[in-house]
Picture 1 (tube, rainbow, N blue to C red):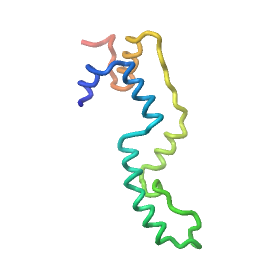
Picture 2 (cartoon, rainbow, N blue to C red; picture 1 turned 180 degrees about the vertical axis):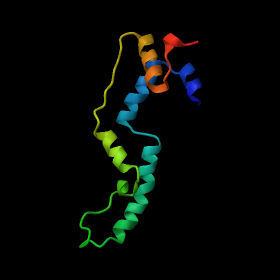
Picture 3 (tube, helix red, strand yellow; picture 1 turned 90 degrees about the horizontal axis):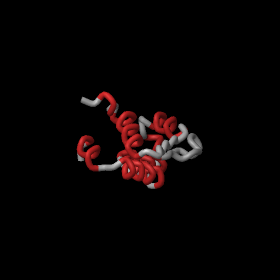
Length: 105
């Protein structure tokens, strides 16, 4: 589904529900990357010299984007829920897609 199609078919309330669901049950490329990195971590731990490196390797040790992910995870999650559904939708459009409904042509 394209972004434009999603904007036409998904309400602000449904989008907010998906955001909440993603906080409870993460999905997407990040989770797939973690699943894929389990193999390299396992292989590295099998061949690890426990004296030279007492701590086992973790899957994220093999992710070049790990430092960025850790910084994002440490940032507080802010959820803003407005009483007006249209105002909520306009806010999402502006923050996520850079759309300004007041200057729409």
